[in-house]
Image (cartoon, rainbow, N blue to C red; front, side):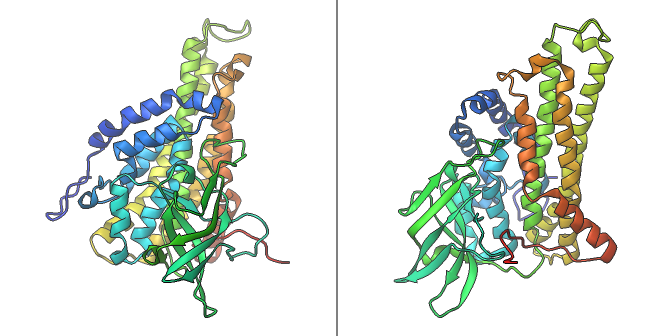
Length: 411
């Protein structure tokens, strides 16, 4: 709903956002199969979205943004995921950084970064390290030098960073006295000592540029290092996970769309089929109905999970305290949503092929991309651990863990 606060600009309406972005999404959708077949990186679609102000959705109007609500933002992510599921994932780090500013960074340090986003800057990420580093540690370091900092290290799963202007790097700051702390270091992607490689080799989300980022004696301005707490409840885990789930819901819509398009055009039928055309075959109609139901359910679940995040944001904007119980509710809803949405979409991506024979396997259709992309997204932050978290809370009222890491235990 538009804001009615007398001192706050009205939020854009859903109709205004649709008018602004649907033509861009349609343009992105038109080239999605060609980009997939040619493995053509999505530089142009990212630029179209940048020019339309997509990266400024959650930036206040006073800082050049659109001031969209959390719920509006997730609805648009679903729409974009339907057009091309690579694009919401490319922007995941960008939006995650903006939400982290609101949730965890000193308000006095937020403005310059929000203003940049309002001007069209896209933020990438360099967070996760691969290899056998110890759980909870980082090998990427920030060390002092003449009033600035020097960044060294290597990251992987740097989704979207190849398309970004600035990089938010998770690093261990070493202050020279034996003390260290986890921080976010921000520097331009074009800075000396920074190299981004498109070496993501997963079978899905091929254009998300989730490869490696290298830092070799890269200088970071002292004012571009942000500290954040890691010992309290935060909505950030829910935000990051729900972006994946919104993308999955978009894939479910794309599955329904492509199945309907395939059936409408199909002339061949089986002698043992149930209709004179595929479109008139009640068994095929049933499959389409099941795919449509999966898309509807996935969208509804994502919207339900977004609601407590929207409530948190409205309290923040009103300057009111945010109860920990609301943050826990947001985390639990997203954790409950993960296995449900993943199973719905993966099942739909398989049954999509029930609407046709071998002709549905043609590479020019690229219907296989829906399963591959959904499987890749669902593999991030595996759902078995989400289900365990939910079960532990249900049985033992255990507080969720809000800060995750990946590594070895040394055992």
